[in-house]
Image (cartoon, rainbow, N blue to C red; front, top):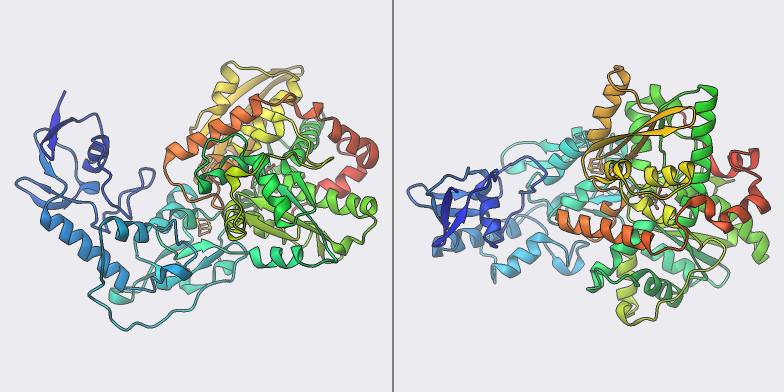
Amino acid sequence: SETLTIDGFKVPIQGERNLLEVIRKAHIELPTFCYHSELSIYGACRLCVVDVEGRGMIAACSTLPEPGMRVRTQTGPIRELRKVNLELLLASGDHDCPTCGKSGSCKLQSLAQRLGVDKVRFNAPRETKPLDTSSHGLVRDPNKCVLCGDCVRVCQEIQGLGVLDFTRRGSQVTVAPAFDMAMADVECVQCGQCAAVCPTGAITVKQDVDEVHAALNDPSKTVVVQVAPAVRVALGELFGLGDDSHVMGRAVAALRRLGFDKVFDTAFAADLTIMEEGAEFLSRRAKGEKLPLFTSCCPAWVQFMEQEYAAELPHLSSCRSPQQMFGSLAKDTLPKELGIDRKDLVVVSIMPCTAKKSEARRPEFGVEGNPDVDYVITTQELGRMIQNAGLALGELEPEGMDMPFGFKTGGGIIFGNSGGVTEAVIRNVVGVLGEGPILEQVRSTKGRRTAVLDLPGGEVRIAVVHGLANARALMEDVRAGREHYDFVEVMACPGGCSGGAGQPVALDSRTRQRRADSLRRLDASMDLRVSKDNSLVTQAYKDHLGEPNSPEAHRLLHTHYSI
Ligand code: HC1
Ligand code: SF4
């Protein structure tokens, strides 16, 4: 095959889009800020410069690999240029590491370390720009922006929204929403993917840890916590426990030591969601009502629909998300059982997601101003709490969750993967676990995958999408009548919740795949894997809810959308 030479070693060219990817194949990780294999190529940061014989120093990300090229990646001038580039970036803003929310997962910080930057020669006075703390999930700090454009491209290309863009000229260039508006006032759905790709602390997850600590320290409060499915396959990354299948059990132990009174599982509520959403689907189908039915557990997607596809809102499932079903059921039943006042019960969620922070604050999810879910913290923030308390997560003996809401089936656990809700619905409706072609289609990582299910009463056409740009394309196909589906699952983040922006920062697709595989393994290890086999969900119907879609189930577990 055709080859080129990298630092004297021959490397084959096998259809790579650019030189950077050929160099990666030779196990050399060039420094980059603005290069992501899933986004368009921008070529702005100039950190990936290499020396190509006859052409001089050029950016590897925007150079086509050609047979016979002789490439050098580590000459003296290259090292000096990269260092100067980094120094200029460090001098251009407020990069005060110890106080930065991205410290520890900041690319600027790690590259400065890696490239041996030991001084910044260009310090110049600069004005401090105000932070944007207007939204529930994110903080934007323009003083830390290095103008790589990663957030602009992820919002445009992956989420199909284009909330952020470059504004102003010359030395005044910044990245901001249109007209410098606040993040809360633009069509941002709080998915947080901009924060996930931001290499510095210019966009970060808003921290709600102080409020949670205050509740834990308040003796008049009973504090219960729910842990989302996807958290358990990512938390360990912060403690070097990536593939430890006991991370959830260890996290339960840690949560109890942090002072939480009860530790419950959002996967319990996910099983409940399957009961409600399955019943809703079958009833709509039997009555010939609005199909496709769109899933409603992803709050970024719900907000996207409210903003962009209001006419299709009647297609959105009326089910609250598992997070909100949990909050509502917990606040309705636990105060009576524990003999306390509703206002003295505090419900905290641990979520992989930034949009869940705004979902919890939607006014319809509460009773007389008391929210069903009081605080939402992300996997990242839980990691910080555990580190802060000095708990050695890897050393803690795994503990079990509390009952009844700690009980779940594999159906609830796989919610954390794109395609998981669909797989859980299929299990529940068809009643069996299967392998085979349909599930293979549902489990692939394509932006949109479809499958046809043969059910009594006719076939059911299913679609699964992740990434809101893919959702928009699907909506346009449905609107124009080009495609017909009966059931559509949408998750805003690539990979679903396990790729959420509240998870530890990890941009490589390998980590995403590892998390997805871990969730599947956890599912396979469960005694029960079909949501309707969750006996404590059955008990909750007996004690509180009646039956799926009953008036009481509607009061506590469903919602309605208005624009
Ligand atoms: Fe999710 Fe869901 S799966 S939305 O991705 O339906 O956040 O994990 O908790 O609510 O269960 C997130 C994850 C999560 C809800 C459930
Ligand atoms: Fe765009 Fe999502 Fe960032 Fe909002 S949170 S600006 S929608 S990428």
